Image: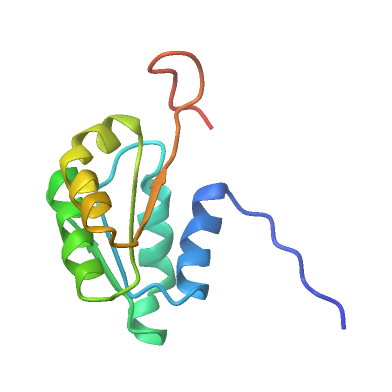
Length: 120
């Protein structure tokens, strides 16, 4: 049987993999260059097909704490950000690590040296 190949950006692939793997919740905050993760999730509407929660938090700190809460209840939860946003999540990440609670955190790097650019 022939399979259909699809070309997509990495952010789209991440979002679709979250849905396909049975992720229960995604909590994120938009920051380039990873905003397309949430945009793809919103376009795919996984809450209609899988019951997955997709929520834009008010900040990176809020999103990692939502991940902490969801993961602590045994749910498969995820977030994504870019390096400055990941820096803001450090306290929540250390709590998750200290409690040995699994979750998915995606860090989408910017291209170029230092802060780099936001070009794809």
